[in-house]
Image (cartoon, rainbow over all chains, first blue to last red; front, side, top):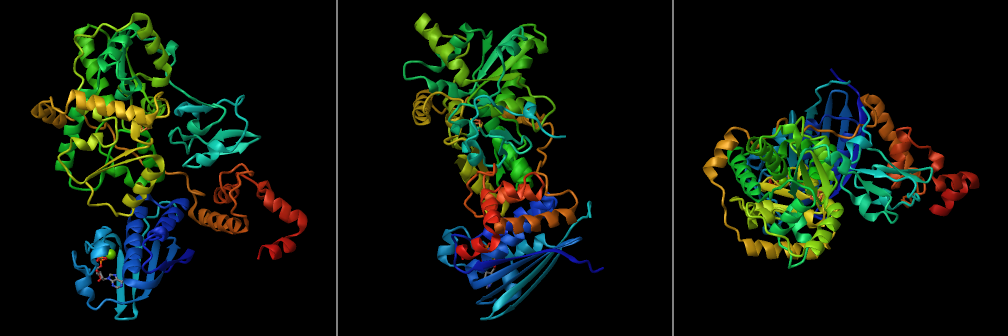
Length: 147
Length: 433
Ligand SMILES: Nc1ncnc2c1ncn2[C@@H]1O[C@H](COP(=O)(O)OP(=O)(O)OP(=O)(O)O)[C@@H](O)[C@H]1O
Ligand code: SF4
Ligand SMILES: [Mg+2]
């Protein structure tokens, strides 16, 4: 059943900007708290949004994150312009990472981002074109207690 | 049910309050508004951090602790001081002397937490051994951190270590021991924590993880300091208590930052103190960023409990006093780990119930309406100056926009909107761009 979009918000993500990295996922979290989404769902959205945002910061030039709230689900779309992923199956492997030495110094590069996104979403889609960019689409269902 | 001051550790003395914006601006949960030139606390949002009390230039924010009348209800009074009490005095006054003075000023019994700190440390270690997720596990010691998590980071309630802090365990143990030893009714024993913060009062009156706290009340270090000093002046060096020579370096160490983690065998532990740094790190934890950290000790006050709002000594001096005492008493463990293991397995240390999320109420309980209000809030926010002047009675423009959206404030309360309207919208817009 197709339900209609109750809320849409867009966020810009700048590649390479480690200082402001994570801001969009904090904003998303606050919005979901404002509209009374269950805290377990917020936890999952927070992880997904944060990991996806960080991947844009680390591996792309520029990206956008779109948040859609439906009555029965939350949809996140993240699209970036950047290096793209050559082998998606490989990138999805836990532990696989091409993070640089500097990124590892900052605590990134465990190769757990994409696997964690997948683990926390109900529907997960990834598309990537090498040297163009990457698109993620994540759905998280709302267990509707209050409409 | 709306929370009232009864659930909290501070109240505002309306006679002294002059309605300046100091407390409203500093409040981390934006719980304070100025209405009719007086500060008002929305108690449902208050986490009892005490920041407002620190900044109030009029001393109009009053901590609520146990009164002497309340104390006198008990036949047998026991003082259970936070070790921070020991750090308030200079080189020449030692912990056991302070403990004996407490007996001179009206307590029947005194107890030092040190051994219990060691025990709780071992219990935390066993919990970490047995539970490999979630990570990081967060300390339960500071009641403000627990409340902050319930309110602002409800998704992290599961990360709080389900083990009561030393003050509660000590009281639990003491009541059993004393009622047997001295043949007393349990309810005749009043166990009073001597505390660096009023927040403990809330965790005693309204504990987050059990029906009833094992403690019966709390008196602040600030309240009791003068009586201790006066007694010492009058008596000279107090006679040293023979039976209570249990003070240990590990126990004392618990009350300065890093104290909990110093004794753990886990290496990847982090200690954070101070309100803003605590909020920052909890944001990171909520993002799933710090999963490789085993244990996170968070204390709301700068430098932890030595920086508590109801202490007397400057926190840097207090910390230095603490370090000296730790060196003096040494770091030898004196607790039998098999005994602790048995208690742990009997759930002696465990929370009665888990910490429940208590998030701030959403803009509306009906989701469709909440989303409408969110959009309205954003629309208003775009109209506001962004100067965060506070004249409207809200701490900043965004919060004011939220108040308007919730129907708790009127747009005209903003002085800039008022000016804009009196000058005519158009003119103002042109000037701005
Ligand atoms: N948006 C993206 N653009 C280009 N490459 C990406 C993108 N997202 C992921 N990758 C590639 O996939 C690999 C795995 O990503 P994943 O998020 O799982 O781990 P990581 O980012 O390397 O480490 P971690 O997320 O644990 O810090 C990355 O190292 C990178 O090579
Ligand atoms: S850090 Fe210590 S003194 Fe400060 S609020 Fe927490 S428990 Fe109280
Ligand atoms: Mg990643």
